[in-house]
Image (tube, rainbow, N blue to C red):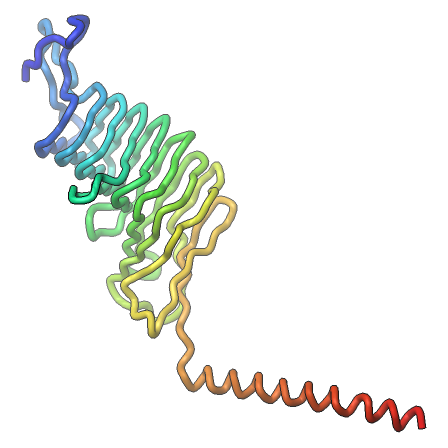
Length: 259
């Protein structure tokens, strides 16, 4: 490409807005602009992504700030390195942005405050390492779970602020109760998810998030059978009757003892 000079004429013009589909595949993949006889990265400045931006097969992209209003995918082994990665909710009537992150994402700030975010490619289990001194999730976090030890994992090198929602998508219903540690942050975790849900049958399973100082687990427990509830209520009823009898008998014993 030959994008010419920037507006001030002091450097090359770069792609500032992407409304198409850009795929960089492989560690040597580049999108370049010719400027004064030099090949320079055409995506090296601030980028507003309204289309699709995909890094696959070990591709490395270094930019200034990236604002994602479309679809962003960083495949396994690939690296997105920027001064900041931002994503927020779009106005009503416009498609919500999505970020499918594996490999490594580096940024002075990583603020994913809207749309959808998931580790791995769409509908696939993956793992992502977020390297940032300031990270925040306020988006809808999609957690893919394919088995007891096959699930999305997100690791943050610094502190992480949480809000938004968590949705767990199971490939198959678990055989029983289970715990999946899907999120860790070396700098600690603040806040919590506003809601936790899944595609499991709510009549059979309950899902909840369990928070530690630097981790979050998804906990799945079984809903007790109606018969179990009946037995538990009956047991509570017997305990209540026993307590009432004890309270009634105690004053009588005291009166006999005093006489």
